[in-house]
Every structure is written in structure tokens, then in C-alpha cells.
Image (cartoon, rainbow, N blue to C red; front, top):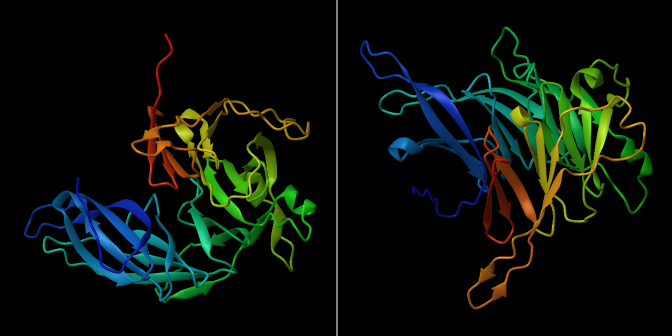
Length: 328
């Protein structure tokens, strides 16, 4: 196990990518797995874990960083979200054998709230970006022009949801604290205080014409998944696209799982949310000298592409690993 610590820093987000490492002379460049980490100080640290080298850093913001995400098609393009309500697109390039590198700022996306999640549509990762925040879900055009000057851009559209119609002085559903693509077209998203998860079509939503003033379009909802009722925010969902699987934790240590293989066209119109495939209960571990540990909030979940393992991260410094058993 390798550990990287910086005095006075608190890392809030990290992201993996693959960049090219040149080896000098006539040797061909090789692929190199790197880790970017950022947080409280607004700096992005670039790390080559295999060689246990922190080879560089750059300032992404004067405020803390909330989220980091690499473009899946261009491993050297890094997007950083910060608490000054901005998302910045960087080209971090590659590295040479001496770990020299160069960072160039390409775009700045203006937001109305701190970005919580960044998501790239699988069919257009180089031209569109979805970002979830406490002020809703917004889409941005990230297509680069012919010149290399830094540009500042506003949202292309805001994607709204049916639950917004039920807002009142005590209920604000605009915080989107879960966002992930299930397929090339189907998106899973979660609104704070709403006890369901929306499944909606990216392509059908995007083809709508935005309102001229608000730039809003309503998500074309395909289905709702029944979840829990809680006032705890930031319980992020995740998807395993290859297995048509969605997982979201709750505030009692449980994992709500959904195997979505076939969405009926009229499933949303029926008004009946789809029930979870299975709810994995909190395993109630026993801590020495303390006794049974009550179910904590599950802040995030992750899965491998084959869905052999499911990992849940709690707010009590506990990681829970589930292994799938093959049915006989």
C-alpha cells in the first residue's frame, strides 16, 4: 500500500487517467497511469503511483476543488470544479522521462452554484458536459474552436424534472446529488429530498428547443426507481453500464440495487415507481469495546465492470465490500 499526504491539505476528489510518457531518444512513448487529486487548497496534485512519484502540481482555483474528472476519450483533458462556481478545462499533456509537463487552460464554464458531479455523454464526450449542482442540472458545450484562446462559456441548457412542480417554501428539489449514465442514452439522476431516482433519455431531452429566457428543457423521463425517504444530502448513486445495474446507498447503511434490463415505454406514465431488485442490508459489524455499529450514511459506491465486487464508502471511515456469488 502506498500513501500520499500533504501537510495542510484535505483531498476532496481524485481522478485516474492515462497519458503518454516519452522516454527520449528513438524510444517510443508509452502509456502511463496517473492520478490527479485536489481539495481544500485549490491545487491539483499529479501523481504517478507505479513509481510512487508526485511529479507536479498546478493551481486550478483560489477556492477549494469539489470535483475532478478526466475526459474518457482524451486522457490529458482534465475538468476541475471549484467552490467559486466554475468548471475549468485543462490540457495537462503528457510527461517525459524526467517528469517534465505543461498545463494549459482551455475553457472556463460559468455556473450558479458549486459543481457536485461532472458527467460526459458516451456518444459525445468531447462536445458536451453535464454537471450537477445545488442549483440543478446543466449542460455545456465543450467543443473547442480553431483558436487556442481561453474562453468563458455559460450553460447551453438547464435540464428540469417533474418533481420541481411540487416545490414550496419547505421543499427545494433543485439539488442534484447523483448523476451517472446507465447506457449511451439513459441517464440516472437523483434529486435531494425526492424518494425516487429518475431514468431519462439524453438524446430525446437534448433534441428539445430550450426556453429562450431560462434555457430550460424538461427531462424526457423513462421511469422512476423507488428509493428511500431521507433528508441527508450527497448520497451519490453509481451505475454499472455493462450489467445494466444501478446502486445507491442510504442513511442507514443499506444499498438499494436495481437491475434495469427493459424499460417499458409506459412505465413512467403508470405513476408506479419501479421497486429495487434487492436492498442489501447493513451487515452490523461489531467494533471492539464499542459493540455493534449502526448503519452509517453511504456517501458513494463503486463497481468493477463485470459487477463481481461492489464497494461502499460510509461517513464513519468504514469501507464495505460486497462480492457477488454466482447462482448455481
